[in-house]
Image (cartoon, rainbow, N blue to C red; front, side):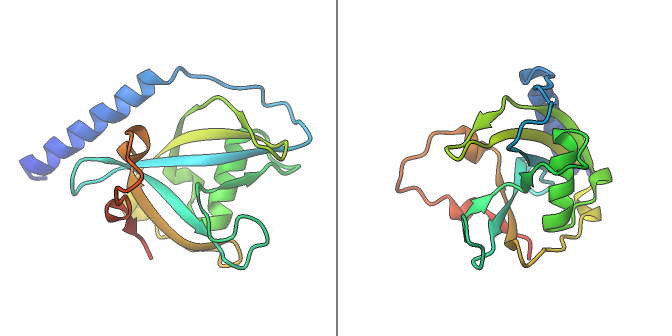
Length: 171
């Protein structure tokens, strides 16, 4: 590994550690309400520029709700799901073919509630080996997969800035 690549890897690891310490380990109430969902905020370290990036999807245009919208992998909790983490990982496997063994879950964020009465639990995980992840899209649910810099969601942007330039298509 070159010195430059090693430096990027170390900086990326330090940023991941900072994130780990920033978010207290929490486990929101995982008892099963009538409407519950989980999304996976799957982060990985970009070897190209050292940034942390997040995996996003574009929903299929044929869907009756939220068609064509950009979202995180995830969905509604099912009977067999033991907890919110399992829901998020199962949905990511179903939607984009992400093997749960490639994800190290680091924390859950505070739940939020949609206007439709669904409690959504954000699950933060780290993609352990990007090269081992070969996306397989469920075309009934997902039209595209791409990634964007995590910083894009943490910084304040004006409405006329072009964020698309920072996204990278996977397929």
